[in-house]
Structure formats: C-alpha cells, structure tokens
Length: 160
Image (cartoon, rainbow, N blue to C red):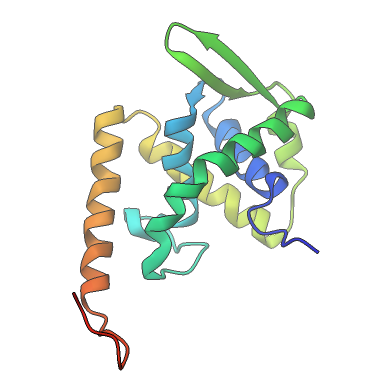
C-alpha cells in the first residue's frame, strides 16, 4: 500500500485550500511551491505552530515539492475544483467557483488546521513580490543551515 502522505490527493487539497483563500487571484506554480512550504512549516515564517515537524532536512522538501504540486493540481483540475489559465505571465492557477464550497466540507481536525494555516499564509504572503517572497524563504534556509551545523557527525564518520 502506498503512503497517503504527500499523495496527489493530499497535496491537491492543500493547494486547493491555498487557492480558495487567494480566490479569485491566480497563482503560478513557483509561488504555490513556496506557499505550500509555508503552509506546512508556518512557524519558520513567524506564524502559527507548524503542521509538520521542524526536522533539519525539511529544506530538501522543496526539491520534490514542484512535481507533487503538479500532480495534485491535475487531480483538482479533473475534479473541476481548480482552473488553469495560460497568459502572457505564463501558466497560472486559481480555485474554480466550486473550490471554496468543497473546502468548506472538509471538517477533520487536520483539515481545519490546514485551512487556518492557508488563511495565515495567504494573508501574509500573497501580495509579496516574487523577490520578497524568495527573500523570506532564503532567510529560513539560512537558519536551517545553522541547525545542521549544530549536529555532530556520527561516530566513525569523518567530517569533510
């Protein structure tokens, strides 16, 4: 059995929550990658408690997140909950008219926590320029590098 964690459905629902909060604004895949990271690791951005643990290797999530988000968007688009727009700015996504209503139906504790973080992330970062948003994320990565520096190499392994 495959793990349901970070499945196209789970990632799609997270992205739909972000897009529903941003509605009717359209967001591109790059912004969605960064906002989804902030959704899961909100404490890193000075927000509410993070939904995922603050392990040092969380920076590596960004490398795989784009593909997972693309697959999640495909699931939501097939369900007609997300619309895609191609224009001079590139490919952008927004919640369909039905998206916010679908999100309202999700009432589990985790869904409520996700929605709360989505509201926070969108209210704090939706209007930032791409450079400002990336600058915020760069500050987080720098702090993660410092966290790695505090770990000692396991016995028998030499540090470079």
